Amino acid sequence: MSPRKQQKQAVQDVTVYEHPLNERIRSFLRLEFLFDQADFYARGTSVWNNRATLNSIIEIQSQIGRSDMKTELLKELERHTANLARLEQNPNIDRRLLAEILDELDMLIDRLYNSNQPIGHALNDNEFLNSFKQRSAIPGGSCAFDLPGLHAWLQKPIEERNQILAGWLASFDLVRHAIGFLLRLIRDSAIEQHFIAEKGFFQQNMDPAHPCQLLRISLPASTQAFPEISAGKHRFTMRFMVQGDYNDRPKQTSEDVSFGLTCCLI
Image (tube, rainbow, N blue to C red):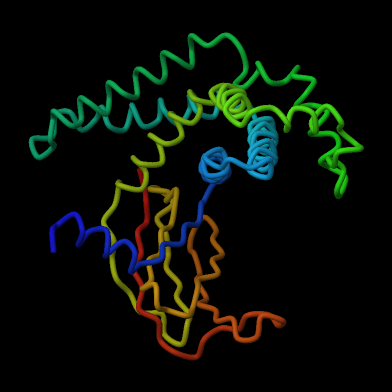
């Protein structure tokens, strides 16, 4: 088996759960999820795919509108730049790789500063999207008799509809690029360690001087248990739960659970 196939097989055999430890990372993860969701639906060729893509665009707008996303991104990019710049004199650092990362951070910072409008501003006054957004808040509110304009648009050739949707999604390219780059840096910032949760319970203290941004928990894909995580400034707790009957609440397992843990500090 080739190394690439081995790596792919290893990824398939593991389920990764992530838990953000601050509001900024929580927003980034939600947007990453929404962008991936929009990509999936946008590849489809049915009116239901187009409707789902429109829903994803509305959700992306809503998530971005919950905070000053440009400011949040700039703060995180500049924080990473300052932290990584301190490593330039470290003889054990791959300086070429570090220079590439710093160049990418500088480019994203410059692009955000040079953008004079809020992220996604081009869609805020889009009457077609706004009418869809208003009606979508009502169960079944976007059906044909509620939005005849949408129904008419859905009769256009799929190529034309997908081109329009791609143009709307492109309004978020900068924020998507920045979030994707930051999350890659964060996820790659620490080495996974292995632990055992005795009878499904695990607790670990955290260093307030070096706050963790993101917890990543990996389990064999065959594991029936999943982690429920609660965290504060000083410690986090994990309870590994199993879902028996899907009509009932999950319960904490009574078995020991072996898992991988990555505390992403950068």
